[in-house]
Length: 539
Image 1 (cartoon, rainbow, N blue to C red):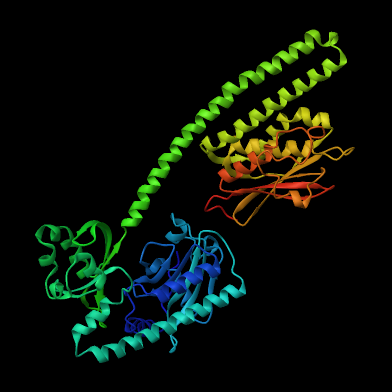
Image 2 (cartoon, helix red, strand yellow):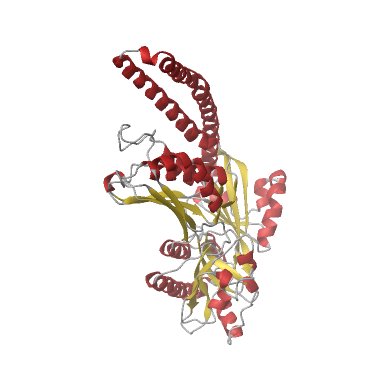
């Protein structure tokens, strides 16, 4: 891992950064909106507004990560701020000598893509970046890069304007410290319960929502200590958390509180340190969010899960009925119709033999349909046994399975050199067998069927292509061919249950992928299984 060199103006840059008073400040909607915009514009799971301090990289806003900061030596943004004039883009960090050994690239976070637009002040100091991160190798087009750069410029403007506003507010409020503390507490706007507690543990501000819950007047609360209001027993549960917040730590926890008016409510409590312009702790903002309805919904979700489990048991009984109770009469029809034709077929009149043929064919179709339905419903019960699968070997096995059908049709199965993919071998074999069998079955009249299996890797997916020279599929039917029991041809021209493609699509979905088709009537079709490439696999 290559540690970024320090900027030539590092000490002045740090002084400028700390002079803004933004480090370790409370979340602000404007900055959160900017990081959310960066995520949407660039289409990445992670977007950050970072500020590079002496020994750390601190996140003013974050989307997609839980931590508030990382060590500076692991930071990608320390490299980005070395060139304040342009957006730094690394499409594959595992291939960049600066980052390939970085724990964020090598570790469980598995970072692959990074783009960071430096946040540059009006006097030319690069303080950090607006950056986006992904676990997949990717590219950004020029419009996205321009948007990222403009967002970083907006952050710089907000930081400087915010600092100017803070200085002006401090100048006006310096003579009245009480008012300044109340304004600080009011920074956490909304319907949450809010209070400002000074370093002596005394309530200095409390909002109306809090008063409505506890059923007290403002005069009854302002000026007393937290311990006096809660009592010894309740304070024993929260006192240590308040001490941690007074020491500078943001503390978030949940508890069930009994309020005089609101009753018993499940609350999420945040204790947020408040700092003066020099960074010293002046008190703590207590923000209480009522999450009782959320907990009620969680219980409702638990009830729904129990219902789903009961439905799973019903499905098990349904599968048992299909595999035993339905199969027995179907087997009887097929067995006795075969015996009837073998023992008495020659003595039956032509009309009776014709009717017997209908019975025999119908019984075979019912057995085939039952087998297909069982395969389909059992897919949901199949525990995916994913591992490296040699597709060359799998296609050879499919060739053996379908050798009789290929020979009878005068067809041919070709394959390119195929990769090893991450999949469930048994399910992938079923999918390939269905796709190849379709390519053999849906041949053009008078044209020997030819099926070719090949593979590519694009956009984080291994793509296995099964291409034929058959009759093809009209464009208006291509969206519906994967539907359960969907048939485009009569049984007189093409046999089948209409389940094969539904099973293939379900198998692809179980792997986290999908199945697509490209087809031209009269020229053939190409079905593609898209299987996700494991994280960390080179493109």
